[in-house]
Image (cartoon, rainbow, N blue to C red; front, side, top):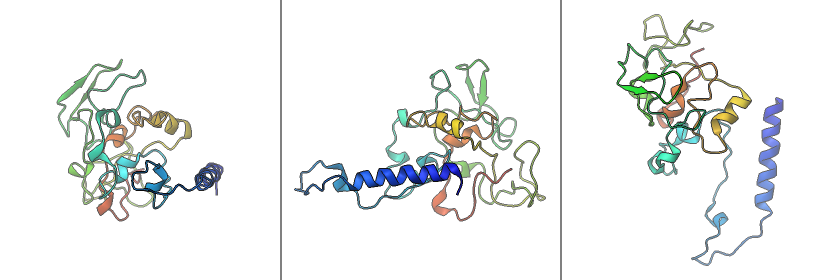
Amino acid sequence: MNRSLRHLVAVTTAALTAMCAVPAVADTGGSTNAFGKINHIVVIYEENHSFDNLYGGWEGVNGRANADPSHTLQVGQGGLTYACLLQDDVNLASPQLPATCNDTTTATPISSAFTNQPFGIEAYIPASARTCPQPGGSFPAGSSLPSPNNLAGGCTRDIVHRFYQEQFQLNNGAQNRYVTGSVRRVARWLGAGPHPTSAMKHRHPETAS
């Protein structure tokens, strides 16, 4: 077990212990006790994915259907809300998808086919798309257009796995800097592009490199 995972387990254990130490409060029917609504506690280690990005469309969850703009719009480093979402995956960037949105909220203008809102990745890169590299292989640009030489699986560009970048993306719980916080400019759109995980078996968005 690596150091970061040990730390996560320790913090999670301490939090659960503290919750369990809270005195039980009888549910009188009109009780506002938040703990009375909890049946199960599930800890999900998502690295730099938000809950809604992976599970927000699942039945019965408080997910994307209930999310207001403050919980769905991505912001730049200076706090300004993007007008468009920058695309780095070749399947989502121009000329594959012509730009229909222009953004001047950053020093470098953005042209994209995607406005600042969640979108379904499967509509553009389905699980059947042959965009995955052969075993042991990779793509120089980080992603590939569909090709008979590739494997099926709907692979996309990779995302950054770095502790401080992930904390920056979380933004104290606002989770609105996923697009901004990828220092390698890879898969910036993944934060706003939910994956259809309820129908997904082994497909994973991070298998592109």
